[in-house]
Amino acid sequence: MALGKNGLVDPCEIDDYIAHDGYAALAETLATQTPAQVIETIKQAGLRGRGGAGFPTATKWEMAANNITALRQAAGANGHGAPDTYGYVICNGDEGDPGAFMDRSILEGNPHGVLEGLILGSYTIGANVGYFYIRDEYPLAIEHMTRAIEQATAYGLLGHDILGSGFDFHVMIARGCGAFVCGEETALIASIEGERGMPRPRPPYPAQAGLWGKPTIINNVKTWTYIPLILLKGYEWFRSIGTPNSPGTAVFSLVGKVNNTGLIEVPMGTPLSHLVNVIGGGVLNGKKLKAVQTGGPSGGCIPAELLDTLVDYESLGNIGSMMGSGGMVVMDEDTCMVDVARYFLAFTQIESCGKCVPCRLGTRRMLEILTHITTGKGTEADLQTLEEFALSVKATSLCGLGQTAPNPVLTTLKYFRHEYEAHVREKKCTARACRELVSYSIVADLCKGCSVCVRSCPVDGISGDKKQPHVIDPEVCIRCGSCFDVCRFEAVMKE
Ligand SMILES: Cc1cc2nc3c(=O)[nH]c(=O)nc-3n(C[C@H](O)[C@H](O)[C@H](O)COP(=O)(O)O)c2cc1C
Image (cartoon, rainbow, N blue to C red):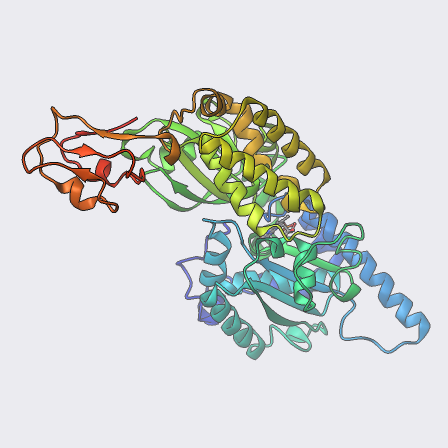
């Protein structure tokens, strides 16, 4: 569905897209549908935004359309000249989650599909100007979208009087500079306006007062891609896939300790187990599954016992995780869940824009505690402090970044508390992953004295005569594990 035309059409050839039903929805809609009818179809389809929160798309569009109509009527009544536009549509192509590349693939592989959605959205809400906000790290996406805009303009699908309908729409590309927070809609708007990308309190929502104060609709790349498909094939078709509350498909980038990695698209409501064991081909090297992390840095860690959970907004939310925009990381028995929480929090802490105190200081303090714990300096009291911080940062942060940053901490505390307790009570990392808590030694009986470990050690911490058992100097060892990795005789012990 969302990925359907990827690999099927040449992204640089508008004719190829048209040959695969491209722009048919636009032509038909402009000729036969009023904006109100389009909103009704999207409402019936039950489409929910794919940028993370799953907000109903039609609700947002209806609000913006009403506000734009009110502005137009007010301007007419005051006898003012018409501005370029009374509102805006924006495609959110920021995609800041580490490891996620779904939106990038669609922008690169099917730019006309997203563009057609944006034109349809602008017609529906009555906006005449739109933006693609694409991060600068996606140069191919920017190149392909630039070409798509040029081709669509040349074909009369963009610009003045589109397909003779009397409707005008102009679109530009705004390049984001790669800050995670700029994916948040109000920060994104500030960024397009040339301000520092920082969020602001809502309301007013962008649909009320967005870009340059005008009603604005922001949707995710995938959300826009569904629009022409729904209008062409009908809302019944869309609703026939997925679940009643979350119709359609979910797109994930499946990564981590799984045999098959890559982009996948499944009907909403598919069990996680199907994604990991069937599509993903099971855990790498036959190891045991420990957890699945969904929703990127804002999501949560789902333990192997809950692998029957269905992939949809409600089911994932109920167990403390979220759909997010589609990152999915599979973790095996060698993964330390405390270290995972520290990893994601290190990301959100550095990406926090610093505007609100809970997020700026709370994520920093939480990261300090997690670092203490993973280096063997944590105490029992730290666990309680960590949980208290996590709950208050979640409850009091200004935007979704801070409100969701504690999720990896809260879910690992909930489902893997025993791992935290082993770190603070016994100074032990049960997964043997936290560097400061592991030690390496050589089993004399197994060591053949081949010296491969000596050559791999970056700090000259291993000694021994040729063909004699070798020894690791614990004072010199930096616990990098290279000796463990290179030994062919399993003589290096990791404890
Ligand atoms: C920190 C943060 C980052 C976000 N990043 C993205 C992003 O990269 N892409 C995206 O579509 N939405 C992102 N969102 C969600 C947007 O704010 C917004 O809800 C979304 O673009 C709306 O589109 P939708 O209704 O189609 O989901 C982010 C939100 C937060 C709080």
